[in-house]
Length: 224
Image (cartoon, rainbow, N blue to C red; front, side, top):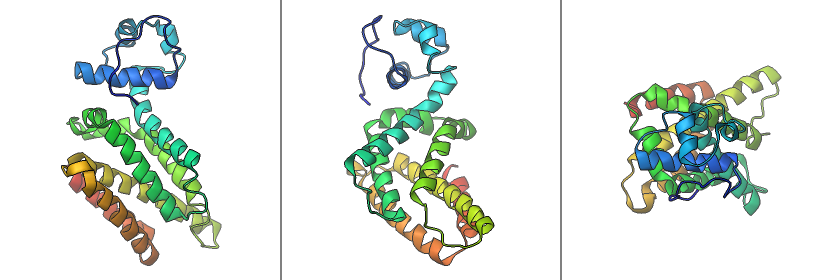
């Protein structure tokens, strides 16, 4: 997504969910706050409310869309490149992380605005609710066949734990990246590679529930 854009003149550009999302991001950065209402947002960008409601039900629903858009872009770029064909679960997840955080870096000003400056941590997590659902569905897809347990009941429980654990790890990585002051965010690249490899080593030797409990503890400490 671009980082600079002027207000949209009437009927000059075909409106899409992605275009409205982009306009929303720029509004937040230029005004240091999210739009107070759908009416004011539409008025500034030369569209009528009816056009907005073809894609979103509210400003809050639009806000949640942003991180889903980042996720979808990462998945599409990976699929188009063909990089993940023939790779295992761990390598696919690594490829996704590196692609996603390149997108985060390209849109860092917005991500910082949306998450780091939000004193209400619960509010910050709500912004990621739909992203969480999309991410866990992606992990479910790329981890197909990773768990070898014969029991369907046990395998389902382990799969749920695996997806939740992956989400916790992503949150920890996001927090690390937000605080990273290294040139080119080189430390984040190292963190991604080492943390994912360490996590898979841990999963191979430790019950998933223990990994998740430890991850939840780290989330509470890191988010303070």
